[in-house]
Image (cartoon, rainbow, N blue to C red):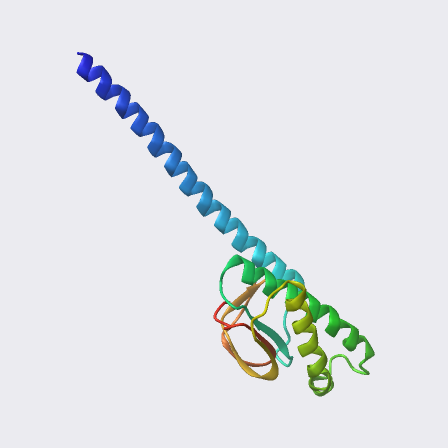
Length: 165
């Protein structure tokens, strides 16, 4: 009888331990889903609407998929977009692909310096590269719109090894 009570007590502790472990796993999964959802909302807010087919896109490759490297990528993106928004206001025809291409080419040294300063501000010392060209893109979802994978003209910024998304 005493043995049965002890076994029942241990089973109760095991059950409670398993329940806490399962709850922690479910919480972690839900947290990861929420973070991915937030990232998509942030990307959609920056995109500001559908990307025209005839446009120059921005592609930033993070050093890795580590959350810290992904944060650096978003901060670099925000700095580059803010800088480029000032240039767009100076264009005669902001919808002109040729004017956009020329403006980006003229400002590549400034963009290169901007990325270097932003990395330095964060104490990051890996290499980076800023270039304009035809760039492969994965399928992307921005604000409920799916953009197919393909090769598009883009300003590409590669941070470190560029092995992240």
